Length: 171
Image (cartoon, rainbow, N blue to C red; front, side):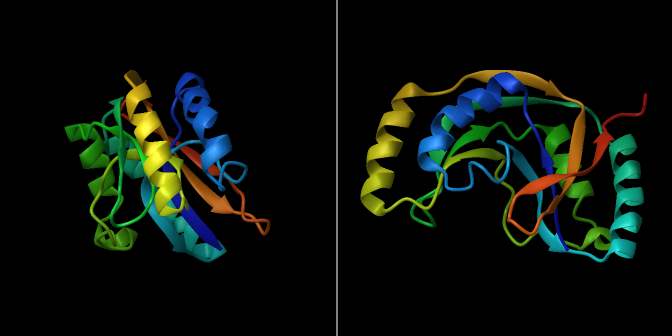
């Protein structure tokens, strides 16, 4: 089965992201707006129970962090994804690193760029138009994050929470 680890922002930020996603993101109905901490990976039922136990420890050893979405950005020319760029705080980077140790699958495939996707799979022309207008709208949002989520993918392609993990020692 396919799994991933994410942070879900507050309803306020999700509503803002969804105001764009419903028009520009074909994955809108498959998963709520999120910041990916660990990309999709495969695991058996036995393996995921073991991984979940490790994630409890990661949560306890990590610190809550401030999620600050501060601008609209793009991954072009690599791909036509438009996103809300999030500040890479030391606490967020430490949590990301803790989720990519050898006993949790090793190093990530890509460099970590904290973001919340708001548009993807656009043609070059669409990307140029949409990015130009969204960049003007901007974003400036800040909130505290004290949990992360292990998700799994259903047969219809949608994602749902397998388990939620609190961040911090005072759990």
